Length: 490
Ligand code: UN1
Image (cartoon, rainbow, N blue to C red; front, side, top):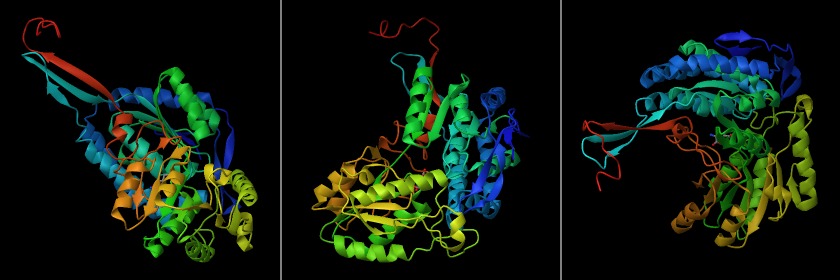
C-alpha cells in the first residue's frame, strides 16, 4: 500500500512503513503503509502546486462535473468500501455505509454549489463605477483527519476545497489509511487531473510537515483539541488559514414531559453508536430528577442487551471495537477514574469473550451520580462511556449542559415548546437537536462547534466555502476620469 502523488502510487522515500490492524481482531494485518517524511510531503505539495495552476482556471461547474462523477463512483463502490472501512476501523457495516453516504451527499451538494459560488455586488458611491466581489481559490490545502469517519469527514473538506479550485494534500489517520487510498482511486477514476489530489500516509511527522510547508496555504484539521491547538499556534505564526474540528463532551437533556421511549432510543444511539467514538457522541446524559431512576433502570436494561462484535463476521453486532490499544488503555483508565468518582451501573470493563479476545472491545459503560467537577463529566473519553448527572430543574439542566470546555453538539428531549426554544437559544453549542440524539449531522448543513471544539469555522453546508476561498473585491470605473473615492464625491 502506497502514497498517492500526481496520480501515481509511490512508497515513502524513507522505505519505512507502519502496519494497519483490524481493531476487531488485531491479528488481522490489513497492510503496511508508508511512514512518510517531510520529503514525501514536499513532493506531494510540489505536485499540488503545479496542478493548481491549471485546476484553478477550469470553470467551477466543470470541476463540479468531476465531483458529481466521484459521487456516482462512491455509490457504485459503497458495499465494497464499507467492508474495507469496517475491517480497518471497526464500526458496523450499516454505519460505514452511512459514512460513505455522507461523502456521496457531499459530492452531489458541492457539485451543484459549483454553479452557485455566489459573490456579492453593491452600488458604488460614485457614478459610472461598479463594485463586485468574487470567491477565489487559495492554493494548496493540507487536510489532516481522524479515523472515526474515514471517508465522510475527509470528504467534508476535500470535496469543497476541490470545488473551489484548490488542490489538496491529504494525510489520513494512520488508523484508517486503506479507506483514504480508495478515496484517491475514486477521485482518479472520476477524472481529476494528476496532482490535484494527493495522499500522504504517516503519523505526526508527516502532519507537521504539511502544516509547516510554506506552499500549503490552508490547513483543515479534525482530531484532538491538543493537536488542533498546536496546529493553530503554528498556523498563527506562519499566517495560514486554519479550520479546526476538535473535541466534544456532548450532553443530552431529558425533561419529565419527554417521550421516554424516544429519549431512550436517542441516548442508546448517541452514546453507544460508533462505540461512542464520534466527536458528536452523547457522553453526558442530564436527567431531570423526576424521571432519573426510572429512566436509568430502563437504559441499563436496554444497554446491557446491545450486541458487541466484529461487524464483518457477525451480522447481529451493534457495537464494534474501539480503534486501537492506545485508545483501549485510555478508555479503561477513564473507567477506573470514574469508579473513584461516581457509581458504575453498567459495564466498566473490557470484553474478551470468545473471538473478542483478539480485539479492542469495551462493554457499554454507564456512570450515575456524576458531579459537574468530576473528570468523567468534563473530559472527552471517546469511547462507550456515558456519564449521567441529575438536574433539579430545567434551568439547572441547561447550566449543567453548558458546564463544559467544549461546545459541539447538544440535545434536549421535551414536549414543551417553550423549553425547546429556550434550549435552542441558551445551550452553548454549534449544534442543538430537539427530540433527536446528539449525532446525525447532515452534509448540507453547517457543522462545527464553539468554545474548545473549534476556531470559528463551519464545515458542511454553504459555510464550508468560506474556509476554502478568499474574497476578491473588484471596482470597475468606466467614467474615463480619475474619481477619488471619499473625496470627489463629498
Ligand atoms: C465526527 O465524529 O467527527 O453528526 C463527525 C454525526 C456525523 C458526523 C460525526 N454525521 O455524528
